[in-house]
Amino acid sequence: MPLALSILVVLLASLLSGLLGALAAGLWYRRRPRPADLIDPDCQHQLEALARAREASERANAELRRALDQLERTAATDRLTGTWNRRWLEDGAAQLIAAAGRGDAPISLILYDLDHFKRVNDSFGHEVGDEVLKSVTEAVRSQLRASDALARWGGEEFIALCPATTLAGATILAEKIRQAVEARVTPQAGVVTISLGVAQRQEKESLEGWIRRADEALYRAKARGRNQTEASLDVGVAAGEDRPSFLTLVWDPALACGEARIDHQHQELYRLSNGLLASINQGRYPEETKLHMQLLIAHVAQHFHDEEDILIRVGYPHFAAHAQEHGRLLAKAKTLQQQMGGDSADLPAILGFLALDLVKGHILGSDRDYYKYLAQD
Image 1 (cartoon, helix red, strand yellow):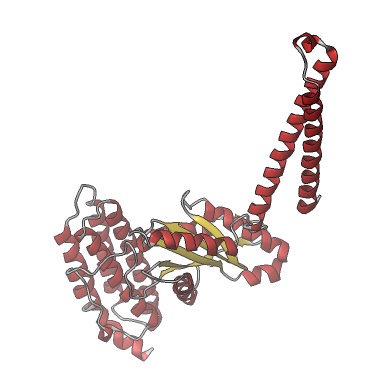
Image 2: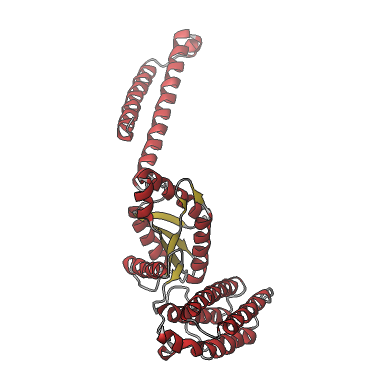
């Protein structure tokens, strides 16, 4: 039975039971029993009828409330995936933005969509495509926290709202989501991947601008080959975001090598390094500092992997020594991470690694040796 017709039936039942209850009550009050009548079988029958009418009315009202709740939830829920819909997201995000404006709590969002989803629909049909959407949604929900909200933005695009979450935390969460989706095999379609863009809301930023920055990050993830996570690199100070510090690595455009992927990853490395230094300098330790370090190491590992692929392609003659240096730097970073188990971080050691080993020794040193081979390519 359609939902609207069900609600109409429940309303009519509620009105009818209410009228019966009122009629029974009127008869009862017109014939108030005297003490001697209390044992009258007719009076007992009237009492029982009144009780039944009252119970029927209460049941009808309860069913009506449940039907109205279901109608309200249905209006805000995507029918296929069970996630919130776009209208709910716009209302919910507006409330979170208003709440964030009353304090310094950070708030981030993760925008993702399915890679090559049109190919799935064209190859297997829309029914299989629907099952893929539901399967991916289950994988994403398995990684979200109770405070996060997942909504279908449109088509195969979804947004996860992450209250009280910095860009670093949301990016790490996005990576967990990406890996969970990639690990799931769906019937007929096999392995399906997603690309993700992450953005933390900046001060006085509108919902449209916030989502636009996440969408630009998502576009970069697709340009890198899909099945990637990218964070928004726009300059700006967000609520709860790291403020400028005297411990800051400054990117010089003159350091660009001309290869878009390497240049972008070098800039991201600077930004993540500054986030790590700021979290230590401002005393946000150990939880947030560990998140920053984890994110930095993940980025460094991905950057080294991508850089090595490019160097093999251009035939860089010193590739073996360069790859060996990559391994040494990554091992040192992981050692520093393991040493971050107490109540404070070794700031001089971390600063030395970032400024001397990673930036001066590698980016400003050995990396510049292969620039001419990129130009020839």
